[in-house]
Length: 267
Image (cartoon, rainbow, N blue to C red):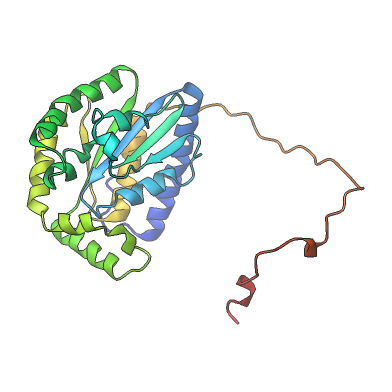
């Protein structure tokens, strides 16, 4: 049954909670079996990638689920093989890694903004399918999501960020520059898909016009792509506390407590 575009909040929250419970089952399977899972989140600025990543990782153990959002490369990293710094963040056995933007920076922002040479760009397009083939051949589960949003919706979200002090940090100078180069980024995305949307490592496009539907659709699809099963877990039973009648808690005035601001609210 298709998810309605204007997903009611109550329906959204109920389905999201169900999917998040499934995610905990999936990560327990990952931990138990030693699986290695990599999920790439790419797409337009303000397309909602971060919101999906937040909902995926919200209730998962940070020991199993790791989010990677790398800054611009250092001078030293610029002299390395391009994929090298990403390899360092790939999962070990029993880990799920979520890339908030990934090695595809070279096919997008680096290419459009001139941060790499034409030779480096075309080398990436040639090497990327080989690199991903090697990951898959070694047993890594690799999923690639592209979040698609219209020009008008991106503009609306940018404007809302400008006027929201809690989200203004999401607008970088690079985002503002990219806003002026919509067509350039569209051409770069088309070229990227042409070279890297392969049968063994396809791109999955998420319609991100409506954030709630995009989150539900992406998480549901992710769960379908990982062949996890229910892992038998030993029933947890809290042991009885040991009685110690000789222990007395020290007086409160021996410690420096955080001031109680909450009790003054609403007066």
